Image (cartoon, rainbow, N blue to C red; front, side, top):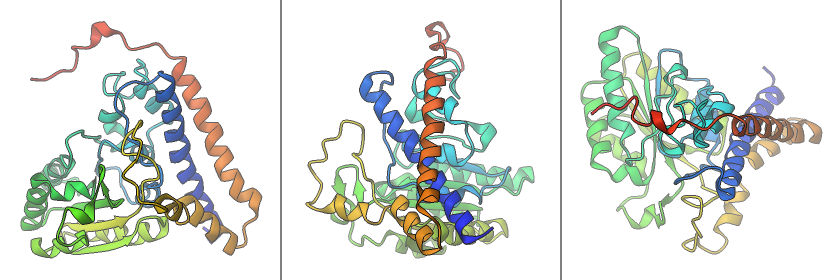
Amino acid sequence: MTDVTRLRADLHQVWRMRAFEEKVRELRLAGDAVGSIHLGIGQEAIPVGVSGLVQPQDAVFATYRGHSWAIACGVPPEALFAEILGRATGVNGGRGGSAHLTAPAYRFFGENSIVGAGAPIAVGAALAGRFDGSNRVAFTVFGDGAMNQGSVHEAMNMASAMKLPVVFVCENNTWSELTPIAEMVGDPELYKRAAAYGMPGERIDGNDPAVVRERVGAAFALARAGGGPTLVEAMTARLVGHYIGDVEQYRRPGELDEARRHEPAVKLAEQLRAAGAGEDTIAGAESEARAEMEKAAADALAAPLADPATAKEHLYV
C-alpha cells in the first residue's frame, strides 16, 4: 500500500467517524434522538489507528464516548444510527441508546456509563481468554479522568500481576469532563503510572493514526506473545463539549483554535499534500464519508421505533 493510499484510507475513516457524530449531533438537537450523548469529535485518529490491530478473537471495551470505536470495529453505521434513534433495527433493538452501544458480533463489547468501568471488564475478558484457548487480547480505552478511578488502578494491577493480555489506552484530551486534568493530579504525565504496576507505559501523539498504529501495535504484539499489559497515553483534543449542550465556558482563550490546527483531519490532509496527493483526493475522502452517513441516517430514521412492550426483555437481575 502506497503512502497516499494509506493516508487517504485513514483520512476517509476519520471523516466517516466525524460525519457520523456530526449527524448524531444534528439529530439530537432536532429531537430525533434523546438522552445524554457524548461526542469524540477530534479524537478519531486513535480508533482509526487501532482498528486494523484488533483480530477476530479480540475484545474491545470503550467509554460512553464510543461511537467511533464501534465504527472502527466494523459495526454498520445504519445500525448505530438506529440504536441512537431508538429504532427496532438498532444494534441493541433500540434499548441501549448512545451510551450503552454493544455489538459482540463485531468484537465491540460496548460502552459503559460508569467512568473507567471498561478496564476491569477487559481484565476479566483477558483472564477468560487464558482458559478458553482463544489467544484473545482485551483492549480497553478510557479518558484521562478515568485514570483516577480506583477500578482502573485495580484493573492495571491485576493485569500486570497476572501478565494478562490487556492493552490499556488513555485518550487524554486534557479535560476530565469540565476540569483540566493538570489541576487534578500531581503529575499530568499519566503514562508514568505504568511503572508502579511493572508494565510498559508511554505517551504518544494521538492525532496521528500512523503513530497510534505503530505504538499500540507494539502493545498488542507484546500482549499476544505473553508479555502482559501495556498502558498507552494518547494525547488528543476534544473539539466539542463534554456532552451535547455543554456551553464550554471552561475553555481557555485560543484553546480550540490551537487544537483545530493539529486535529486528525487537518494533519492527514497536510501529510497527503506532502506525499503528492491532489486536492480532489483529499476532498473526496470527506464527501464520500458524508454521503454514506447521510444515507445511513435516513435509512435509520425510516425504520420502525422500538416496541415499548419489549422494554423488559433481555434484563438480568
